[in-house]
Image: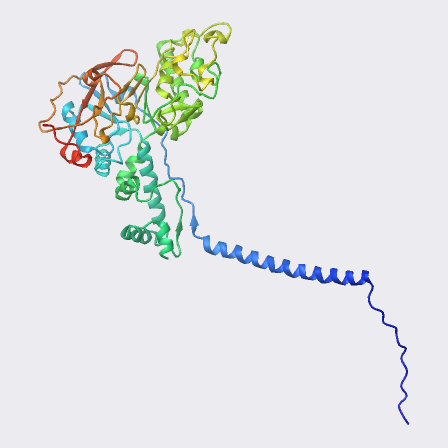
Amino acid sequence: MPPNYTQLPTTNRQPPTDDRAKELEDDESFALKKIFLYIGLIVLLFFVWLGFELFEHLEEPPELSNYVDLQTLDAAKLDLDNPHRRIVMVGDLHGMMHSFDNLLDVLKYNSTNDLIIHLGDITAKGPHSTELVARFANEGVLGVRGNNDQKVIEWYGWFEWVKSHENGDLFLHALFKQQITPSQAKSQKLWKTLKYSYPKDWDWGGDHWNVARNLSPEGYQYLISLPIVIHLPSIHTFMVHAGLLPMDPAHHLRSGLQPLAHAPESLPENPTAEDIERARNEQELSLLTDIEPNRDPDVKLNIRDIHDLEPTKRGPKDHEDNVPWSDLWNSVIKRCRGFDSTASGDESSLWDDNEDVLANPESDVSELRLRKPLPCHPITVVYSHASSRGLDLKKWSKGLDTGCVNGDGLTAMVLGKGRRKAHAQRKGALEAQQSAWPNDNDEERDKEVPFGENMHARLVSITYLTEIESDIFGISRAQ
């Protein structure tokens, strides 16, 4: 008997409608999108992982500046009441050790009675940077830090930071031995596990790099001990490498933010001489703390001029309308006539009705006119750095960089009661080809000049180079 098959009902299959087809296509598209999304996330995670693997050893260096903002030398340290005492302030040396020795010889230097204070930039450009630093460190010579010294400090700190890593010293040794840069080392696969960065504007293999590479630990400690500013309160003087501002150019001279526009609040109504001295010291220090550009070590290490109300490292060759910071300093300080000179009445009576020239970049600071004195006492700044201006002597600022490393002269300013007749220049000395004082009267080269309120300083200069240094600069012997 044949099996009994149940006849299943047949269905009439119809092709999907357009809506159903679109729905199926959307489902497939969504599934593909999910797949691509997952793939993308996997790829992203891979590259994140790869990035960590590649850059896990890439480190930014720590803070390398090691700034010391201020050092104060009191009256006891200066010892100017000693009839044999001399304070010898000397401009940029730049490793010119033999020229420095010649200057000391002309001065008849006496280590017992003479106190040397240099104005920074004792390193770089010249032939004996590390030797001069080692000597100053051993003798404990006082001074301020210069912009070139700062670059040496930072390179040395960078080397030490690299050495602090595993195999860091071997890495540096390989670079030095093969005379290649870190970038070249990377391309040659010497840089497999260690990665170090340094600022792009640093000059690998340059003069500061080379000085730092050969600097001793003691020399480095000496350089980082140098302050940006030395304050001599007993003679109301600042020593700084490049310069300071007497006011903040961003604010009007009448602003209460200007330290010299008002007497210190601590000054009593009927002050004694001691009260006035304390108030003067307070006001002098407020120039460093209350004027924003003066709080920036980079400004004090590099300033030459003021341009568009901002301190600038560039000189007048770059901007003809630049105002030398020392012009501004003297224009303001010359109006300091004591705390009792505070004007009464409307604050605006202190000033001309003319527009403040510092608010107009096209004006010259010499146009600054104050109708009445300022409630402050004068302050002197001694600086270096601006060799293009030569010996730059103004009433309240003394610029001493006469370009020794450029083949010009080396200048010292001497304070004190000690008087010793200077030696004549050595026989066989080598004359510089150009005057060390391109912008000043030659008669100022070796004479007394006013200093501060009631002092005088003696300028002592040499205009020659030693044979070793002259060979470097190609200067011929004098006939």
